[in-house]
Amino acid sequence: MTARLTVLGCAGTYPGAERACSSYLVEADGWRLLLDCGNGSLSNLQRRCDVAEVDAVVISHLHPDHFVDLFGLYYALRFHPDGPRSVPVHAPRGAFEHLGLMLDDLETFGRHCRFSVAAAGDVLELGPFTLRLSAAAHPVETLASRVEVDGRVLAYSADSGPTPGLADTARDADLFIADATWLERQGPLPEALHMTGRQAGRQAAAAGASRLLLSHLFPATDPAEVAAEATEVFDGEVLVATDLLELAL
Ligand SMILES: [Zn+2]
Ligand SMILES: [Zn+2]
Image (cartoon, rainbow, N blue to C red; front, side, top):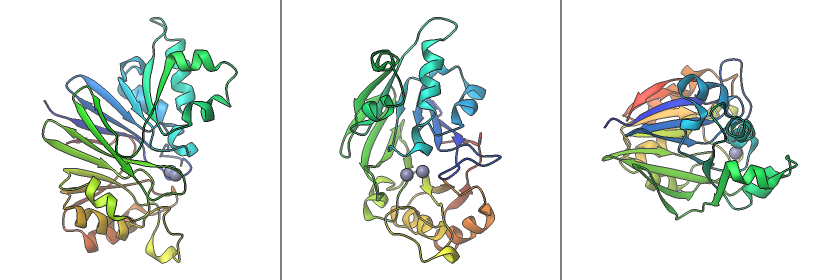
């Protein structure tokens, strides 16, 4: 069994011409797990599979660039050509009500997107995946995740400033997807919001991760500059996410 990651969106905060907002498809053993569902990512998802083939969705937090395409997913499942479909959605407390404010029929929404509350400390068994959720450093409740599958580890910082908990989440990870929204030269920068390339590199080094996938870059940011910051402080392989990038775990 080879687990595989496909980046469906990696733009920070708002989409760019070539980048949708955050979403990652993780596949193993015929199972498909979607981490976040940011604006624009549903289009990329459909380049890889039918929407009905997603087995579970985990939403890291309730910022629009991480959940907005759940609305499109809902309608795509509800009006699926093979008949109505549904998917479990694990999300922070209040997500269903929050998203429901945009819709006129909560009951139908809940039938197709079956929400359950996820919180830091939870361990979710989803098909072949074991997810360990932890608290990221961000202004709203945000869940970083450690995904274990077949002896491999994928870690996802979600949106986060530097915090010691992230190194635990990504401990010895084969691949660490880290928020690298900013560059050091853009400082001074707010705390507990996002990381620079250098901060992401430091977290990866502290975690002992093998590979670092820098993501959530602002669309205007030069990927090479972010990568250079991380490479200065992290000895492992440094990659910069692009939409539809595929990596074996
Ligand atoms: Zn974000
Ligand atoms: Zn955010």
